[in-house]
Length: 318
Image (cartoon, rainbow, N blue to C red):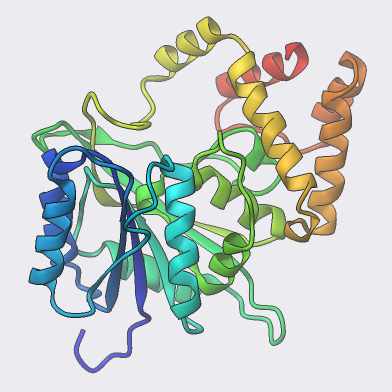
């Protein structure tokens, strides 16, 4: 958009054996209508030619367009790798600059960065001495390995605020964009090792009292293939059946780690969120009556009533 001052976007890309699909993702960065961006990339120990593809792209994109982070850092796994990138990009950001997460196997639609930047600029109230952290996320067009459309991700139906953020992650990392205040908050935080970076971002922004800006417009071709780290949610009945087979232990382990991590970092919590986390922590260490009391008195709600029912069951049993 010539003649219009654009906020600079730091795009964070962590790769691991991603050569099969990476070229299409990198090409889609060059099609963005919002063209004020810098790619910060880190490879997490690939054994294929991922790094060669990124180095070739850096040459093609132009001098200063790409920054390699932690070239000899070794295997960190996704959350630590993305947090390393975020901390590397953070010092170079100015007020108004943004951060966007990118996955190695997706394709961005041309308006992806522009929509996120516009949403963050238009809907975040700026208090004179306390700008508000904000997280933008959006829907995705689900595609197969060959980019053939499979459908569209579901939209959000209920509140995305805290403490509902503890019950499930409703953000998809490849669509997330963060304003400068959210980046600074997250860069100083320490996520649990078992929590994915997108959920941690969602938790921290909402626990602090920030905003989640949900966009109903798809901005990414979200590729579904056998190697997805997470992938799109399956049909509700399939998710429910899989959850029943797993039992409460996996989910409750993540919940306990998230609660503990937030309690250990009180600077991340608004007064209301701190009260919520303390009450939930006490309930998790107590019997069924206190757990039931927390479920009745706190806004612990998932997006649909079947998901909510399963969460209540796991919370009471786990």
